[in-house]
Length: 345
Ligand SMILES: [Zn+2]
Ligand SMILES: [Zn+2]
Image (cartoon, rainbow, N blue to C red; front, side):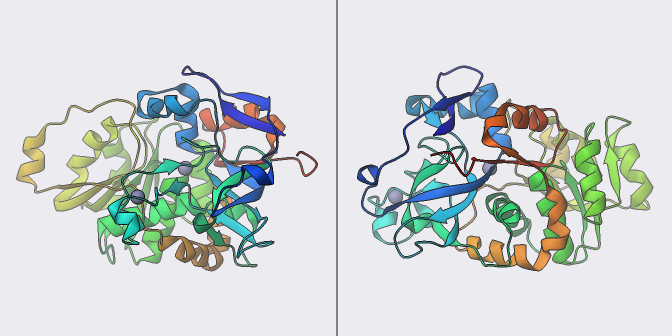
C-alpha cells in the first residue's frame, strides 16, 4: 500500500510503498482500521517543514504520519463499524494508567507522530482508542473530530463565554471550531482574524461569522475597531501558531480578560509582562482534551453539521498528497482530507 511517511530527520515527506499490516502484526488489544479519510493538520505541516516543535519524533523515523482520521474497524467490539481514533496512545503501565486514569498518563505515543498513522490504507491502533461514529455523521465531518476536541478544550480552558465579546485569532480548523463553539456557548460577539487568509475567512463567512479582520490589510487594532464600539474583548483565543499575534491582542483585551493559547509555536516570544500584570490578563495554555470529549464531539458534529461543513474544502486521493500539502501550506484551503484509493492495499 502507499503510505505518506517522514523518512529522514529533515524537511520533506515521501509517498512510499509499504507492506499492508498483517494480522500477525496486530498485538493484543489492537485492531486494524481501514482508513476512509485523514485530514492534513497544522502539526503535519510542522513535521513536513521539520520545525523544532516536532523534532521529538526523530527516534521514531521512518513513520507514517496522519492522525485525524475515520475508517472501519476490522475486529474487536467495534468490528465493521465506522470509527474515529484518538491519536494519543496511553502507555497502560504507569501509575495513572493502572489506576484507570488514562487522562493523566504522561508516557504517551502519538499515532501519526511516534507510531504509524493514517496517511495509508491501513493503520494499526489500540481498540480502546476507537470511538464509534453515529450514522448521521459523514466521513468528511468525522475526520474533523480530533481538531474539534482541541477547540472544545480551548472553550473549557476559557471558562464561561456566555455574553462575552470573543476574538478568535487564526481562521484555520481550530479557530473555525472555536468560533462555532463560542457562538453555541452564547458568546455575544465573535470576531475572527487572519493573515492573508481569504479562503479560510470565506469559509467562516459561510459558517455565519461576518465580523472579520485580515491583518495583511492593516493592523488588528484598526481592523477590530469597526466592530467593537470602543469596547475591548473579554476572551481572546490564539489559534495562529504565530507568537507575535499575542502581543497584538493583549491591548485589545479588557482588564481581567482571558487569553487562551492553542497554537504550537515554532519559536519563542518576547513579551512585556508589566501590562499583563497591571491588567490582570489571564494567559492560559490549552492542549489535550479529556478522552470523554470524543463522543461529545461526534454529537456536536451531528448537531452542527450544516455550520461545520465549510470546514472541509478538499478531499484528494492519497496519491495527490503533495498537492494537498501544498494547498494547506499555502493557506489555499480549509481542511484537506486525503483518501486512500479503495483498491490500495
Ligand atoms: Zn491534528
Ligand atoms: Zn500511562
